[in-house]
Image (tube, rainbow, N blue to C red; front, side):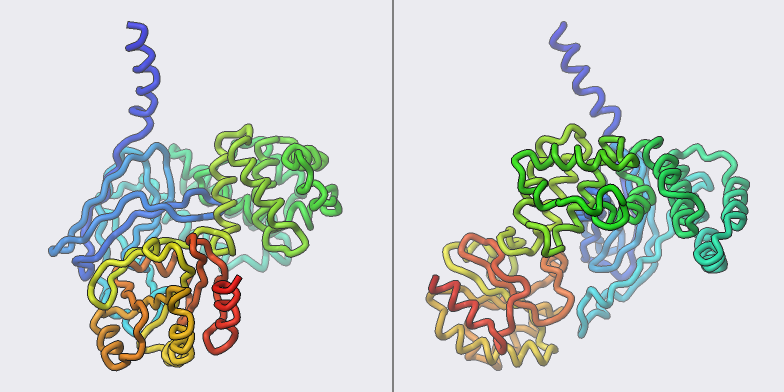
Length: 463
């Protein structure tokens, strides 16, 4: 009996808090395409995580379901087109996505062609979270457009108080805690713009005397803006500290946490640690700070932080600052080659790899291939060469290759794997990436074949 009670005690919280959330609906024009629900691993780094994915069927209908234990913000995505949504545990959402011609993306990078999906939530009540946020944002946006100068230049506190009174009347009984906090921190950002109260009062009101709302987008947006450049610029007690010396020490975490406590606004340890994580994101990109020391600090915090909520964030920050940097893991893929055979990045382990993203309509891409060809001939036994076509149609790639018989290295087609462009942050074509024999990035972006690439290849193949 005791064992049974213990098992129930362990399992019941998971059963209570993780509830099945379901999204169904229609997306005319997206038949046969993948629809995803994507959220952020955390709201500091905003690294994406897919909660669920499905294929829109031949009638334009789709259905997705997944367990959810808290209210979160998500993106509903088809290709690169997105719409923002707020989801609560255990609720069902029926979406009508307005028709869109998804095949229009033909001659441009989909990053540039992405559109906002227009979504209607069927059966939404006036007190539903998405309805409340939409109504608040509408008034908020109008207020900012009309009165930004009054706040920013004239520090018009009365104007902001009038807005607060208007919101209190419009939403007299805020029963949804997520929405209440959403309004509080979005309005708080206007207080910061207007500089109505000093930093000590702002920190006390919004951070020290309030819980850390890791999943509320407006709390975290406000936090990120408020503490931007805090350790190195805006905090008087901290900006002259020797951070390199602290980061190099054997007890860098303890040393930094103690040093940051000198700022009376950071007396709350959990908040102080979060500010440290936010600052490491900024300092990693500054050449005056040692990257290896920051990586070691983040790795340690991800395992040893006293605050469980901050441990995964430290790990995410480490991934964020090292993403696509030398030494980081190259994003994997499995794509079709010209013979419709599946080829994975892992198939090339054992020799370095040059990856190139290109399209047949990109004239610079075609020119760079002419410069690449002699390098392929010279180094093909010591290096793998892979060109990934982002053309919409597989036949376009093959037609081009049939005309260019001399281009005899590995060509792959992106197909529906548009996420790979996100993984490699491909904003323009061509883009080249050098990867070592163990799948680690050596150079991103690598030099073009016409300007310096061969020197890098020579170093990799003749160490």
